[in-house]
Image (tube, rainbow, N blue to C red):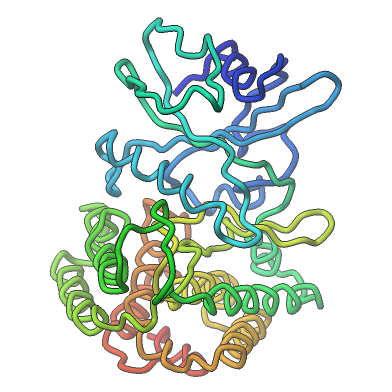
Length: 397
C-alpha cells in the first residue's frame, strides 16, 4: 500500500491536536533508517516472509522530533485472505500491546479511507459523548505504535551462526529472556475479579484456552496453515507425511484442550526478530500476537527452537556455542517456574515453530537444515515428554 504523505501529516496533526510537519516515511527494513525495529541488514536474507511491512514515520512538532511505527497487515494465505481477517489482527494488537511489560506501546488504531469525506476536519472532544462513525469508503486498518531504537536479538544469533565467539553478554541475554518469560507467565488467568473486555470477553478459562489451542493447530497462522503453505514441488516432504503430522497434532489438541490450569499471560510470538536490545542494553519486545492469554510452552519453545535453528546452520546439531544458550535458557526458566509439566505439553508448539523454520516460504536455509528440522518434527510429535538435554537424538539421521 502506498502512503500519501499529506494524508499522514493531516492524521498526525489531528492526533496531536497541533500542527505536525512530516519529515520522512520509510520501511523499517530499508536503509538508511537507524538499525533497529523489526529486522536489520544482517538477517533480512534469512527470514524471507512476514505478515506485514512496518513503516517508520519521522515528524516534527515545533522543534521536537518524533518517531512512530505504522503497521498494516498484508493479504496472504495464512488466515489473512479477507480484509476482516486483517482488521481483526490489527485490532487485537491494539487491545493487547499495552498490557504486556516492556512491549512497545500501541498509540492509536485507524483505517485508511479512500473517499473524499472530511473525516479529519474536526477533532472530537471529551464532551462530545458517544459518536457513530461510518467506515464506508474505508480500506485497510492500521496500527500506530511506539518506535524503539534497538537491534533484533536475531542479530546476536546470526553473529554466532557466522562463527562468532560466545560472549558473556550472550549468556546474560539468554538468562534475561528466560527470566522475563518466567515473570510474565506467573500472571495466570484471573479466576475472580473483573476482566478486561478488550483482551478477552470470556467469563472462564475454558473458552480462551480452547480457542488458543484450537488456533495453534487449525488456524491459518497455525499448524494447518503452515502445512497448506508448503510448495507442491517441495520434494523433501510428501503430502502423506504432512497429513500424518497434522493428524498427530489433532490428537495433541484433545490432550491439551482441558488443561485450562495452564492459561497464562503470554507474548504469543516470542522469536528473536521480535526481541530488541537498545543501545543502552534494555530489552524491549514487539509484535505480541494472537491474544493476551495462552500456554506458556508457546513462548518458551518459540525462542528455544531458534537456538536449535541457528546451531543447525553452524554445526549441524545443537553444539557449542549454541548448546550453552540452549541449556542455560531451559535451566533458568524451569528453575524459576518449577514448571516441569511444560515438557509434557510442549510438543505441538515445537512442531508448529519447526514447520515455520523448515518452510521455504519463510526461511532461506540449506536443505540439510530443513531435513534435520523435518526429522525433529516427526520425532517430537510423538514424544510424550520432551527432554531438552537429549535434543540431538531428535535431529540426527
